[in-house]
Image 1: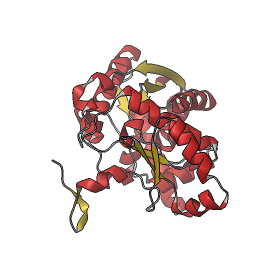
Image 2: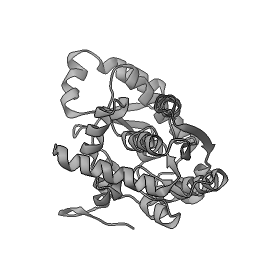
Image 3: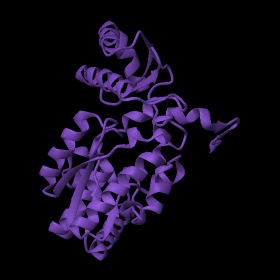
Image 4: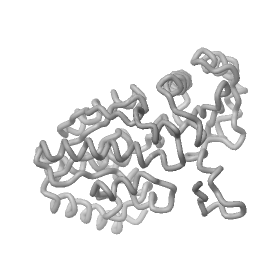
Length: 282
């Protein structure tokens, strides 16, 4: 880690926030938005507000963590309800599903910002996000949502390093995508299916797994765990307990993905043959 470069980027972030004069942070309790909320509070004090969108696609544990983190940081915090699940364009689960979700969220946040007299709505996108399939960025542009971490050039690794220096407990928190990302594109998303996934993932976390995904394939749950943890699943005799708990969540079959955990694995079907860097959107 280049300490001088990180210091320069941190100053740049502070200048961006100071220049905004008032910021509403879209707060998900992830590593990125937690750092942004912390820095906004340090720079702007009461002119910084963290807002978390509450919906069926956000795990209850994540909402509870957002409340606790905001209290720890000291930033003002509000919870607002979003209704993306009522939008057929979202529920039909197209490859640009995130656009409809973020458009709903940012629309609500923009209203809150106007109520609070805050000129800027900001999200936690970082410099690494530019190379990924993120339809939500289109919604951010349309709603004039800024990305201060990205503007400052901060990468995910730098965000984790800076978070650790600031004593934020999210410095090593695994990335958490919303629960709607657990479904193959084209499979309809319903509150009942989301609840299944949430129950299964909560059960696995209770067994000590931190980084995981339960992918919903109808009656089949496809488990993604870090590859280095897969041998321990059998060596410790956990497999039977995992199967039992996932079935209790409502699945009939439990499958282990031998490729292991990978963020955005549902996007693999969108990759062009022989071109893993190129997405083909229907």
